[in-house]
Length: 199
Image (cartoon, rainbow, N blue to C red; front, top):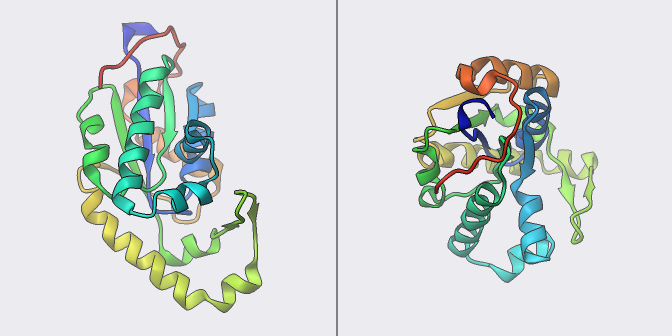
């Protein structure tokens, strides 16, 4: 990579805001590697997300493990990368990464209604499915739950300076607009030459 600097883009946000879809599209536009933290957790612990939750019932324990896997992704890979970071609601498990010059963190935001519209479900084997009838029957509950998450992460993600409001845009449009917001060194398409980052 020109300049010898490994670049890392971390995509944060509440569940169903679009981290994975937008992050993957952004990585394609930049020719960066893409990692989804939830997928890497399943690979690292040889488990499903359902079992990971069951085996780690205390949020504090889960957040520590998720933070460790996040740092492992960065240490084990020598390509520029975009990482979709599933919710880690204890900032101590990722804040140290935000101070690195080669790391930029972006929080995706949207309205409760838009996030609700994207709401999907998964079974015990992590197979994704839609159930609009059930979802709409319990809309008030989900809207309140999403609102609580949005309010809660304001404190958790306060150190993240870059914010992008999705506003229910298409994946491609959101990724393109997000690309334009990034500092210039992150916006240039890069060739990867096996650099390293210290954590």
